[in-house]
Image (cartoon, rainbow, N blue to C red; front, side, top):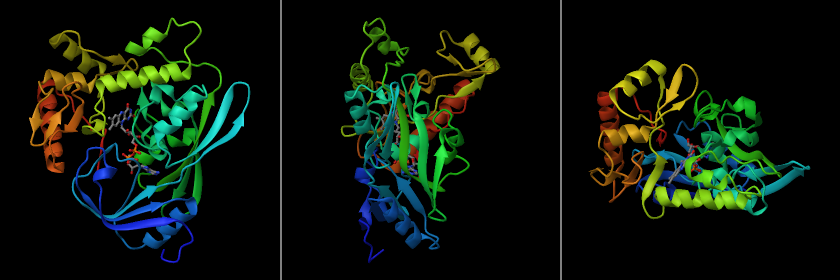
Length: 343
Ligand SMILES: Cc1cc2nc3c(=O)[nH]c(=O)nc-3n(C[C@H](O)[C@H](O)[C@H](O)COP(=O)(O)OP(=O)(O)OC[C@H]3O[C@@H](n4cnc5c(N)ncnc54)[C@H](O)[C@@H]3O)c2cc1C
């Protein structure tokens, strides 16, 4: 990498405090920022065969570092927004993986293109949006993804995944399962609507529904940001990784038993066999809201979020998560699974 023409920045023993929204003070043995696909290919070729751990991160907003990282952490600075095509109904936009997701949302809303506005203000970068299948307020990103451009880690070869190949599901994709760690996203191609297509079924967004004319993408974005700011901690002020656990999906029989024991169990019917139950409700019922453990705590406005209240260590957060998981298991016989990626 030394004689590279490609812009690559390498730092040794680099603090990751600014690279994870929990704000955990852990260190990467090596931190590599690259600015182009060619730069990434060169980095991968230099690292290949060394047998060292490698991790690609975005904004670090869904990561829980369990300690220092004894390997190379890679980060993309590939930043561009290319307008590929436009017709009377749709626009196709190709976006570099290193673009901040909400910067892209802001640009789409400014132009009144519909599709990303409900996902406004989600922290992180474009590359991870396609790994995580981010979702909020009734929309998942797979509804606007057309293609995901990647580089295969083992060969350095490009591969483009059509949306169907990404096997998207609730906060899940092929990149988190079968192909975990095997491909690095370099760009995502999104398809947005130039005519209003709105999703306003979620609670507070319903107040925009009777609007005539239909609300602009910018108006919906503004409403989403206002809701999020009233409910969620801002990473710059209070460290967190958003929802710590996934909402569990249980068999109808399990739900019926729960509903017989407790009044008003919030739920969302997925199909005739399964029901989704908000993890926040389960955690709240176990009395965790606002409770702390070492420097970590359960956010007092939303018990699904664990926060770094006071110089938390990775162990504080992991222990708190384990205690919560145990108590939900004991009280409801439901197993919570983390949404956050443990590293
Ligand atoms: C306050 C707060 C609120 C949040 N709200 C939401 C929400 O409403 N909805 C939601 O879905 N999520 C939410 N999240 C979680 C988080 O913002 C998303 O998961 C986001 O997509 C993570 O992006 P990132 O760039 O920070 O990725 P990281 O956390 O850095 O990485 C996430 C995963 O993607 C992988 N990865 C990152 N970049 C690449 C790449 N270029 N190629 C291959 N793999 C890559 C990493 O290895 C890791 O496995 C929230 C988080 C916070 C802190």
